Image (tube, rainbow, N blue to C red; front, top):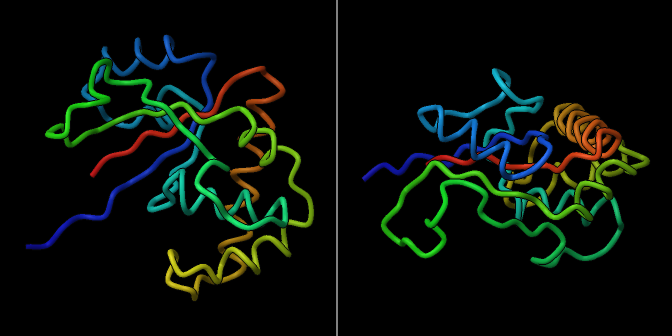
Length: 154
């Protein structure tokens, strides 16, 4: 059996209610870029791969609570083990703030491009461009007093 890789998009919104309204009105498709300001992150999951970016920015060891998230949509699916998506999760504000305050992106990119979860051989220039996109998104979210969200689909 061939299993598809999950897809992730990150975006900013005022709150989970705004996200739920958009997602309920749609077909569950990603709201990026049609409704919300965000970026296509392909296979960058919030807990591990984005968490490792946050760890690299802070120059600390990765741990699972660096980027936490809670289900924003669809309501009531937190414990439904048969539901296969899509989902939208709200990221912790501290992760947004770390991303927004990132410095020395070239150093972060060199470190992050080597992580095993990305295959250990991502082009550093591509990693740097992606990190810059995440940093800019986080800055826009913080400046607008908005939260970061992650849309995910299998």
